[in-house]
Length: 188
Image (cartoon, rainbow, N blue to C red; front, side, top):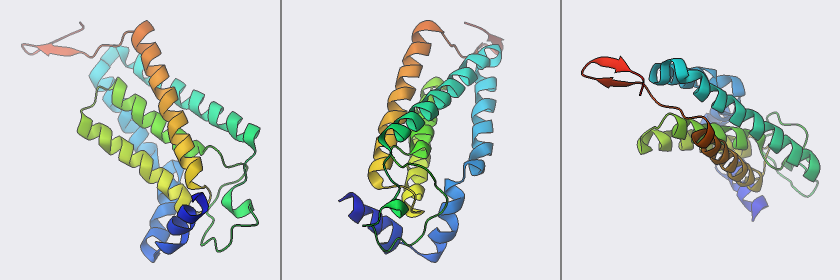
């Protein structure tokens, strides 16, 4: 089933537009402006306490990346282009080393979850962040560097780590937004 879904995404639904767009979506550098926006929103919303939120984001990313890479090197699962039984791979864009879990998927869903929680975003904005992470995961399959199961495992790992970091921060490092009362800004 994993191989069939991989072929469906990598080959069957492929087209010239996605061939151009998916490598851009998969590129880590593409999303630097979005990461900067997260930091700007944290600074605007939390002022002097923003360092706590930014630190939580960095810690979430670091733990997720280190954990996903440790698991990847422990499992040593091959990428689709490294499995001899997998034929007709339409494209292979980047990707080296091992496959499971996808660090792209783990890192981006972790950032989406922790940013949504720390910034107390409304559900609509959280769904946009989750859709962004899912799109990146999809791009990794489309680009031929991960199986769907690698993406799903990465999403589970990243989401779990983000929730744990958020709960620890909420418990041990209270973060409160600056609130305006009668036009006067104050710290609660």
